Length: 497
Image (cartoon, rainbow, N blue to C red):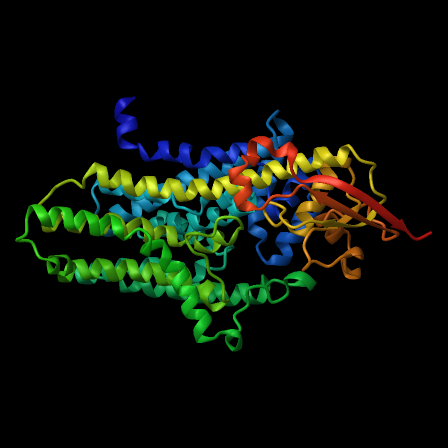
């Protein structure tokens, strides 16, 4: 048992970093999944994935739905268990890639896995559909590992797995980056490059992209041209800003290897910094840079990004692939610093500092999700204490709702309070105060956005009182004293006969 823990201690960090998922209910787009499983009606979810052009991900929904039906397990538990399992497998594949491509020893590769599994944006995995994003990225890594096998059968399986991973569109670029980085590493180490493998991956990616564009392109009123590259919308300022956002994942951690180098330099001033930039080392940095570029390029082209401090919302999903280059770069840099000083093992103290910084930032993200979850629960309880509004449109007058909820998220709170999907609820000034007509004409949309029992006859205004902003929520210990805040001051309905 002790050897198992010693060899795979990174899995312990999966429990630490993923454990909060079991205590935070589904949020963001995943409230639609929660509703589908509670009502045992997957029509809305099927509608969502087919229109968004990712029908393969429905396979996992069907499996979990089947398991729920034949067991006593709740769908929430199954969602969380599946997500944490994928997080462990994803981190394990990064570990294997670091060993197979960069030649890391077990200790260093485990360090890569630990960094991956504590990556600062995993707090966004409280939305189950983002766990399915991560599943596709895991399949890309797994498929590539199988693809480079010498066994023909395993290689073919790898191609199939890679094809399945293309359900997440950013993998079209990322899989090329995986193979190109591998070949660059071989080139700079004077080894035989796998040019035919690279050509096959490029051909596979581009042909799949064309097929996907024809047969699986997003469609419908909501998702038509979703994430489509429009070069006329790109500009230099936004592109630089987006690239900088992604670089923050590296910038805010560089102090650790710099400090480590200075400490070692103080002990042995004969070592000079250029020893870190030998030909082989430069090749490693370039390979990691290629992985980073392939990870962010699809998002840069559609003018999206995320930075290390995106805590409250779910833009962190745009940085999931950055976890791979991030998890390779810092162990690589620390290892090369060690090699320059003829030291075999990286200081456990500095490794711990790095991991603690990861967990601290991740913890802040989880804290914002806990606040939002508490508000949702408490607001549903407070709604039960007032007269149920007539079906129709509801406007929540507020200033500081935790989490800045989208209309369908807060509409779902009304469903949980009253057991009916009868309201179009808005809580922000930028939201439409009534559903568009086209949304009411299709059962798929009505179910997806909790409008099954909706009627446009009544308009209700609910005003909140005793609100506190995000800083006051910390100082006043909102997560403990939540019942004292965001109270319903008044509720007024106007109906047309």
